[in-house]
Amino acid sequence: MFPVPAQWRDEAEGWNPDDALPAAKPRWAVAVMLLRDGPDGVEVFLEYQGARSGLGAVTFVGAPLREDDTVPLPWAGPVAAHWGRMLDVEDPHLAQRLVCGAARVVFERAGVLLANSGGDHTAEVTSGPDGDRRRREVHDEERTLADVLRRRALDLDTGLLRPLSRWLSPAFLRKRLCTQYFAVVLPLGQEPSPLDGVTGWGRWCSPTALLADADSTALGDEIGEPDTVGRRLDELVLPAVLIMLRKLASLTCTISYISEKRPSRQFEPVLATEAGTLMLRVEGLPAPARPVVHSL
Image (cartoon, rainbow, N blue to C red; front, top):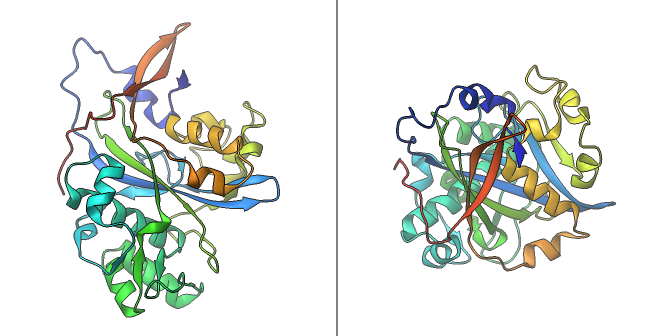
């Protein structure tokens, strides 16, 4: 059982399953667990997105899919049909959009470019005014990721990404997401940074340290926003993120996590009551089950 995240409490408390309308159709989103090896084990890059985000106030780098995630771009690595099998989606075009969306959000929100030059080496990105301007242009939909790659004669390196689980927002929410999670180890020569004016806070975090004291509000206090101060980790992140952080805390290096072969799984938290308190129970859905989602 998991606490209801702070940004969902009002809707959870006002939800009556007997009187409720049919659950809202979710739209697709992607979130990427950006990893590196640290002195005390695996570290993950977290960012603040705020209470309005369907991905949680604090989360991995992520965002909903956009129309421009369908734009053709130079591609290297597993083909779309193979990604469809790994993600358990029948439409290879949807699989391609999910992969392209994951690469886009990692670039625009963290400044990490998942690309290589003709398959020879991973791209190195230097931070600076030009790089930040390109990220802003992609975020504001003035430029596509395909434009950035072609300008630098690079291919999207899809082989760097690893698919994780897929999570549906609870049925009581008016705005729901179907979020496909991915993992990627930080490419050599790159360092993530928040996008100024969009991601107010972001940094490398040790899952072990975050989970050491369940009652600690240190992370929320550090972020310093009205919707984070005084709140525990399990009030700031969604159950999906908390479960993945617990997994990362048990690891000694990124290679063991990235190399692990895992079946495609889909989960949906369900509202439940425990000792008079609203909680979320996570029930595993059969892998073939797929949500009905908005097309963009």
